[in-house]
Length: 281
Image (cartoon, rainbow, N blue to C red):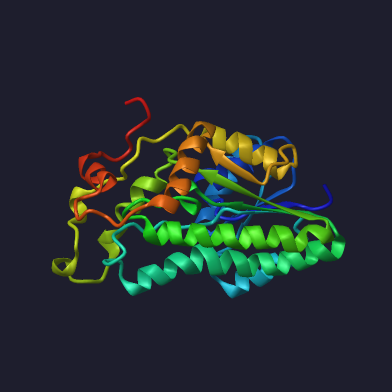
């Protein structure tokens, strides 16, 4: 591999663990973290694990940070940085909706533009997007997040077709409900809304993420394989046992009828669920 692997959003979750694993086995990795306070923490964890890891401040929504990253000679890019805004589409405040797309779409795509042109000039490189099953399907209270991930899917698909002749490959990772804390905090973002709670359609104190969640190990393993070019598939829905269900949900849209005016099952499940519920619990 001629140049480093850049992983955005590596201050926590999938990004941090994948960066540490790759660095621990000798790969040149740049861990991009959103805020400067995360730099020291991730460096310390890398030392504890015996990994030589370069950690850089990289807020994908910051134009200066993106321009700085264009100087790093990136050979493999994992667009992992992202946020998740929960809430009914009719309730989410404008500034929160805009931030959802600034961080999950505009920042990563603009970062990718500069790196993709460099890869095309070298006629080599790999771009991977940490998408989601929410890029393929939609649940209640996840419209903003799913909307951003549907957009990720569109940009990734277009890039894959556009960069093929330049020797650059593109792939997506599509995690389902994994227990990293990301899904549960999505259902707590309402605490930061600057609105009048009396105007909301829903009482968010009564809702929780409406799915049982899996151990994240399969995402770490598969992401490493994709970044190293050991897995050549374009899309990777994880855990793999959810693939038939996701296909069925997508196909069902073709024959879907107007709703019958009753509460939908997943809305009720959000009322009945508790945060951090594991699969099999």
